[in-house]
Image (tube, rainbow, N blue to C red; front, side):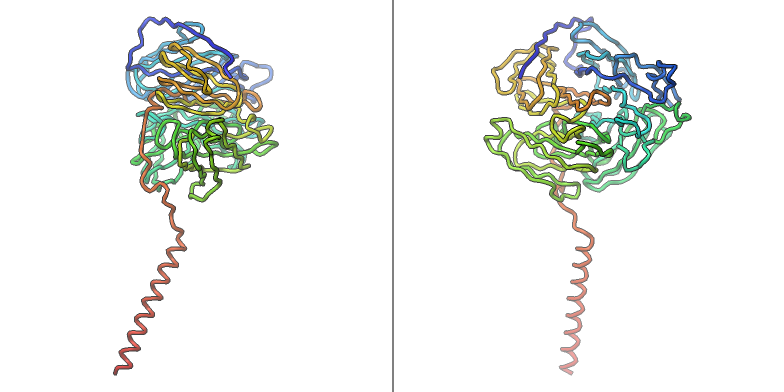
Length: 494
């Protein structure tokens, strides 16, 4: 149901060109970034954040009532502007180079856009526990988000990114770590990962559908731990290159929520690949997924080895009534591969407080649609629709509505359907227990437009080694029997 309409006319000195890249976001009212190890008599120290930059430890203070916006450059000489689209003023302007990262503080409640002359990576995060340094505090920190590729979309062979926070490596049990580098191979691939100062690197090989998990250094409260950390890297920026197509995400340990991009690109498709990890058990905590159909279809959810986890059939009536499939899986680590006979949208999350769809999060995620493409999603708390250009949009099957460029609309919780004649971007908010740890990479129309083919052999299940052993043994027996019979026949003739 539509509850708020806000129209703005943003005047900026430089007129936006078609070649510019525009990203939208909203900062939910939240708790302040907090260092639980700060001295009680020094309250400002609770908002001090340390990070590794160019191999050096630096620190700064996050203002109360603000979230952190990280921007990393993909190319040299990239002009970036951050604009408050409600207050109609420029928050910041900067020129960035490749691998360079800048951070900005965005006040809670801000509706904003980032306008860049070239493509950039943008990560928005906040909350008292988002960089919780130990893993034993409640609630533990971290988020889940896919990392965008350099060329657009969330599938590719080059990624330059700021590592989003998973459960921190100081978590006292390795089983409880939420990995902030989760590499998923869509094709057989060699891979190489290096920090931007080239002092740390890792490489390896993955078979198709293989995964590689790792903890990468991201900002945290290093000084509270004698300036040490348990993750790789000497800078917050990393570069991954591969020989085959991959997808990369941060897989947090609890209370996360994200829309999953399709393997074929965009957020509508028939094949999806994602991971989830519930590493801290507790009341009402479970891994869950939501599937919303855009046409009648049968959906099968597999694990990474293509063993069936669950199946569901959607009817034409389900599509008409915007019905969805909410499925819980309990605690554990899960790799999801989803195959559908019709178009669907797929979301993954974890509940906290109750194993109920409205207790997903707390977290934010982004989803978008191409011109004249319908998307569906579930908003546990609310959602914000952004218009990157003048457009006409239909919300939940209602009459078309005109939206001017930079307009935004707020939607209540529940299942929603959006279709516009131009690109549309939606931020979905989920808050099961308060805004303590949340974050996501922002998206632009190029991330929605990128299209790919289903990788050859992606659904071919590897035979177990024992099967090959049985086959080889059977062949050996057959050959031995044949030789024995042949020798007997020759002996009889003699």
